[in-house]
Amino acid sequence: MKKVKLIEVRSELGAGTRGASMGVDALQVACWDKGSDYFKRFNSVSVPDLNYTLFDKDLFPHAHRIDSILTVQKNIANTVEQTIAMDMFPLVLSGDHSNAHGTIAGIKAAYPDKTLGVIWIDAHADIHSPYTSPSGNVHGMPLAAALNIDNLERQINEPEPETIFFWNSLKKLGVDGPKLEPKHLVYMVVRDTEEPEDYLLNKYGIRNYSYAELNAKGVAEVAAEALEQLRECDIIYVSFDVDSLDSKFSKGTGTPVEIGLTVEQAKELNSLLLQDPRIVCYEMTEINPTLDTENTMAENAFDILEAATEAILHRESKSTAIH
Ligand SMILES: NC(=[NH2+])NCCC[C@H](N)C(=O)O
Ligand SMILES: [Mn+2]
Image 1 (tube, rainbow, N blue to C red):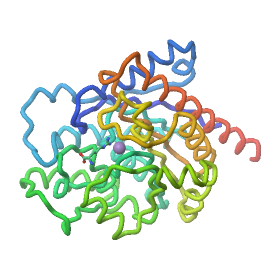
Image 2: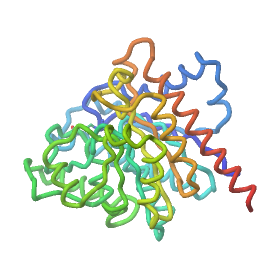
Image 3: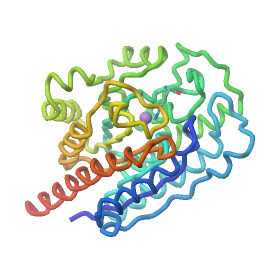
Image 4: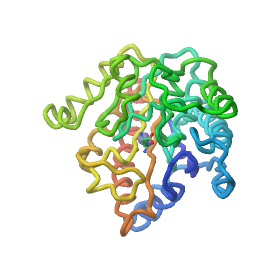
């Protein structure tokens, strides 16, 4: 049976609001408070963060702190690649969603010849580039970096040469060239996008299961359809941003949005997806306890994390039973 390795990434450099670095620790507090032994059951490794640079002047208005973010992502990619090489399952607990690009780079470095699929459960499409981002926050950009897309057709910014240098280096992380194809990306409950993102979703026909569709069809049907859409993919990565939850459950996150998943739906969705043996990595991100009351977000997220982890372990034991 494959062992789960927890990869803790406290970097919050990609977020526009401070505090997501404490998300991992908030999950650990939730674990204690619920009397669970979760964090005792799995080995963990912590990827160095550069959050101390937040007090330095930011030199990149269209991709804030992209210089430090590149360093952090190199470390994430190496750690994920190494974890896979050791035949363990990397389960990433992360500060902000920009880190997910480092994860994808690590997966592709470990499996350069395999076709990767990504299931992105999020309120946001995170498919901006420094040329299109209205905020300049890099947590809105990980998928454009993975897809190797600048979206110059919808350019609204003139990034400085230094920004472009770091952006191009970021896109090359893991493998030089696209790590993912648009047809192998599936969104779940994305509902807060900007025009340059809508343009790309239409241009490439990227599938998004809206919350209305998920409710109408039911979680099981939507999970099965998404996995079926990725039938050409050898390996799949699932990225769970807690702002996919309805903002009534998710005050403790930097960019909450209404009309999203219930905690029960998120548990079921993650569990069903993670039963697929092609899933090689899972990430949970954007928990910000400084915006929360009574650690509610981390407590909800911890329940989802436990359910997701059970699915990974159950799946693995099933596959060993067959062999
Ligand atoms: N991972 C996230 N929470 N992303 C939020 C992105 C929000 C907005 N689209 C931006 O680019 O600034
Ligand atoms: Mn996100």
